[in-house]
Image (cartoon, rainbow, N blue to C red):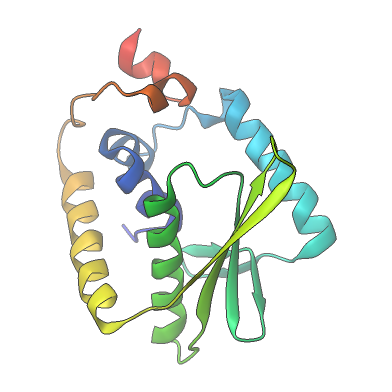
Amino acid sequence: MKVTGTLINYYFHCKRQCYLAGNRINLEDNSENVKIGKALHETKRKTQYSEVAIEQIKIDKIQGDYLIEYKKSNSDLKACKWQVYLYLSVLKAKGIEKKGKLIFFENKTKTEKRLELELTNEIEVELEKVVESIQILLEQNVPPEPIKTNRCKKCAYFDYCYI
């Protein structure tokens, strides 16, 4: 299976969530938080950007020297960064070199936060290891045990893991 941006994001967020999504156990259609995120994404897509699909990835926008990814918040910054690194790597493999830009919609404060990223040789090496780790994770017969954190309460898989 090709590793997607969503799987990279989930891997850093929660390995159990990554496993479940990667093995086609989708509970996100019932999640209020996912619905809100998709609605915000759709609204921005109609007004500010057009999504670009290349192989296993969907990039929010490519503008000038930048690949731009929009997120609802920066609550899991590491996961967001690695998702962008994957996208930059896929583009680079196709001969398209870009920098990354994360734009976070901070709904509570009605502000946008921006973060610029660049794919370095060190990050590419680490990304290969991450992709390999995800592929190994997805081939396991059972999901990892849940690790209860504060983030779990908002997760689409909460009922699956804890009820």
